[in-house]
Image (cartoon, rainbow, N blue to C red; front, side, top):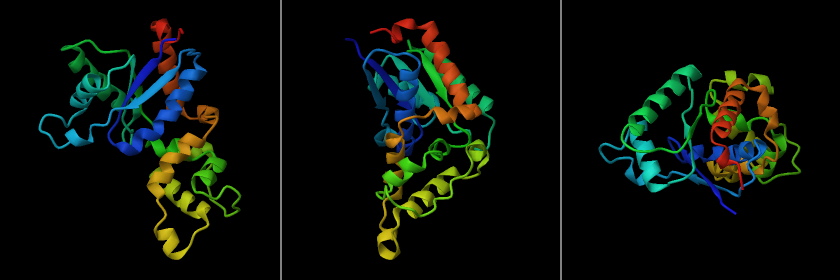
Length: 218
């Protein structure tokens, strides 16, 4: 059975939390092929001249991590989602003028991808290493998380609180590592359909799969 290989292009390693979300979405869209996700790790090339902008990252990702489908991530941060999508499309067009590219999907969380991990308290407790803990983690209401100015700090604070640790043990708590673990422990991302950016991602992915049905077929 053929494998569907997809490549995720991001700004940094913390964005790999998107991989479980993207795989879940592909399964939800009816992909019956085995799925092989890959993060385009370009860290060793980041300081090289000419490899710094988005078009360069896309170009290198396609060369070094070829696949059937390309997910290109940018956090919206303080900009409208539409602006980030336009920036991605401009970079894709620049690279596509030089070479063939696989189908692509824009991944633009509002404001940053950590917002998409603030809905599953059980996964946060599990990632913190204290599944049976009862410490309040104070997660914001789901419909408000796209308006949070710094969802990363809120996720890190929730993980530290859920850990139940104090003093030196809390200072040594590997919060960034545990944040990446949260996404791996979520079984169902469907609550995120209450969010506009997540709905846009799912709609865009569905459109690409309709245009390229062979991506779904085993």
